[in-house]
Amino acid sequence: MKRIKTIQLYIIPVFLLMFTSCEDLLLEQPKTVAVENFYNTSEEVKTAVNAIYSPLRSTRAEQIAILDAHTDWGYGRGSRAQYNDFAGLNATNINTAGSRWNSFYQAIRNANLVIANAPNGNSISQEDINYYIGEAKFLRALSYFDLVRNWSGVPLRTEENMLEIDLPRSSESEVYELILSDLEYAETHLNATAELIGRPTVNAAKTLLADVHMFMGSYDLAMAKSKEVIDSNVYSLVPIEEVNDIRTDIFGADLVTTSEEVFYFKYSREIGQGNFMLFILNHPSTDYFNFGGAYAHYSDASNPFYINWEEADLRKALWDKIDFGLGPNTLVSSKYMERDAIGRSDGGNDLPIYRYAEVLLIYAETAVRNTNSVTPEALEALNKVKRRAYGLAIDAPSEIDYSFSSGETTEFLDALLQERAYEFQFEGKRWLDLKRTGRAQEMVSKNKGITIAEAHYLWPIPLSELNFNGAINPDTDQNPGY
Image (cartoon, rainbow, N blue to C red; front, side):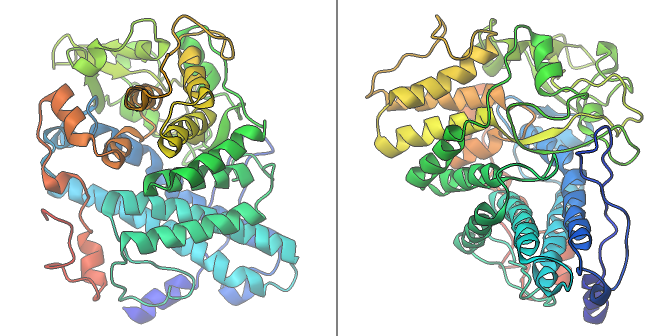
């Protein structure tokens, strides 16, 4: 087994991306060659970097949908209905969690290959080596950030130990240490402007750093990094006037990029290169997706979360009442619209990982937590996001603005947490926010009347890892409840 695994590690993966509709999108030609004949030119290293994206893109829609079924507003249907009881995962959903684990580690493996081999290229500049290693480290950090927040401490597979099979679980702090190291390198060596649309930039690295620092409770560092992104004056919120503007101008299938795109996974209307999220969410009756939809995730109009949501907020109108057998209060999301997909798994909509709206809200939250006061700058950042959601001028004070005194930090943070819940539905943020702030049980109890089992807070280490990795004891190293 070890010999087979070693051979696999030295083959360039055939998970290659092919984006169309714009010459600026990432393009990769399939290649499978031995390592000694590869990584020699800038083009070859770029091809290897592109292979990091494929497993992440393939699992992203599923990851987002599953995370949002864990929330105080989201529900799953069919095999996903089991998430609704917050009692941990059954055998079916343990397997699907394991497949996401495998995708993250596949991306990490591909990143490790670039980091290990790019410096040995014989026809590539040092500048390009640094840049592509920076991109690989950014994507490796992103993968480990997903892993540590959903599984806690995990085996740290890097370019230095990638041939080792038996690796114990590292602690959460050790995982975060690697994430920070990778992102600091990426921040130093990535470009200010994306070489191609869809590649990370310095500001993408700063944003991910800000998010990581926020999750770690380093609010001063998170505030500083998010403020650097704001002060770069590269981004702005996309203005809207009606609900359909959200579908077309922020998340539309025909968009190449927008003024608030910090880092997105890019998709296109190509077989095997499209976005599966459209089919997961849509209902055939709405005509928002030309291949109908599985409506596997939904919400409920009788949930206090929805009842207490102000009607003037255009984001609320992204939910349609559709009775598909669960009653007249059933809600189906129409956030992602695509009427020209070429297959049910091939919508053209990109999936945001970080938008400028999140940069503003990270800054607002961490500024208040860091200073223990509601600053005018933090309040304005929060209000910009809210004004846009109501179709108002983003930079002008309005009648719907939040108003808090400098000492009303608890009230401010409550409002901000709720604003994040409205803004990032089906972007996979809410469950992680509730865990991060220690408010998961409070909100799930308030809006669903359910007690969360300990096993539901983390996903189990997959059976495939337990069988493969002799350094992990299934009796003592598994997550609680499994």
